[in-house]
Length: 217
Length: 217
DNA sequence: ACCTGAACACCGTTCAAGT
DNA sequence: ACCTGAACACCGTTCAAGT
Image 1: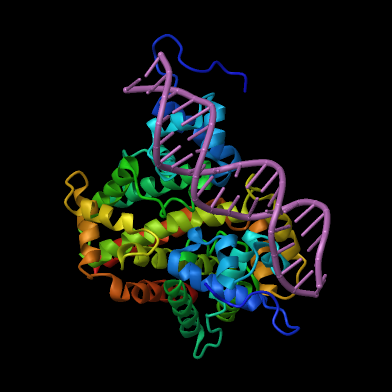
Image 2: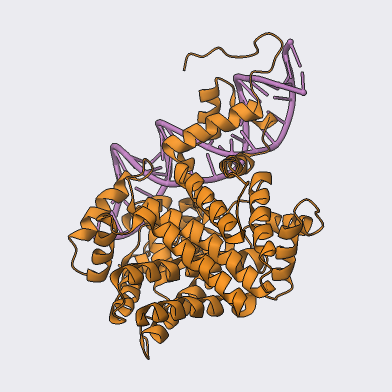
């Protein structure tokens, strides 16, 4: 709002980090869809075009934002490869839940350095397991799909999103609907909290056990 | 282009089906992101605002488009429950590959009737397996995540997309990169076609076998 | 019922100009 | 190097009006 504008002493007012942090906060509050270069600039107390000195275009900003989310994932792990893979998966899952707008972007957007480092780390952990190459590949994608898929699902069935309050009323409609009894039953199952609490970890262990088991044959 | 405009005889020029089919073709050609109400109207030889007599807003159009993709999935199945689940999964996977722009929308957008019918059918198939409720739920999400995740992955590693030719050059850069050796190795593995061809079916069977096996204990 | 153009309130981004 | 306003080429959608 009524912030000091322009330069202050000789130092730049803007900085990439400042831009990204502010954009992240705005995305967390209203979703990426609602984030615009113009709103972001206003929030920063700068002219729109100033942003373009730090970021090539809007896509690059979103990429930076997603990578900022990736940066929250702790890459240090302890224990054997299954423990390590589990830690990476859980940490990624939690980072995505902290920034739900990032879930659909996660595998759509070109990865930044943090995202690459995370992928590298997970692949490295799987490599350390000395699995047959095809099993390792399959395991990587199974883990990856599970991380994203579950985050999406958890947000969908979980707390109302700032982004989509319309959706919540539609979900209510579903429950009193009669055309799709199994769907209604399924939604009710999740709403009652039968699932959510640690289905993520449960399925994760199934995948990891499956991989470890494949290694013994 | 130079099409006949306005009414012809007494009949409406536009029709929801015509709008959706045209929009679908445009989305297939250029991606949903490039699709605009204005371009669509021009393509149809109509004024922009005419569209709003058939569709509430742009979101509703995209929902209709995604449901049009869902409508391509054949719901009739044969054989036991694993065979039936397999058929639904494969048919969905194929429909998504036919319309890659729909993959990120698939679980983001509110489902239309065809999508609901498909979900209902898959849940029904799983219900017929008489699995314990938690296993059925877990199986549903595993299948669902696998369908989407694999379609996404296959498009990412597969043929160049009309949408994102910039990405293809970035992938090339990755291969000659040295910072992320495991990532480069992984991408090369996929590019060499070691995976893609039927990893989808392979992992699908792992999931189904796992569910069937869980049922025996 | 069906179709429409003008107008409004937004976008991202190019350009030319300022310090 | 850093910042900027004006301008351009787009958006989706409201409104009031036409048939």
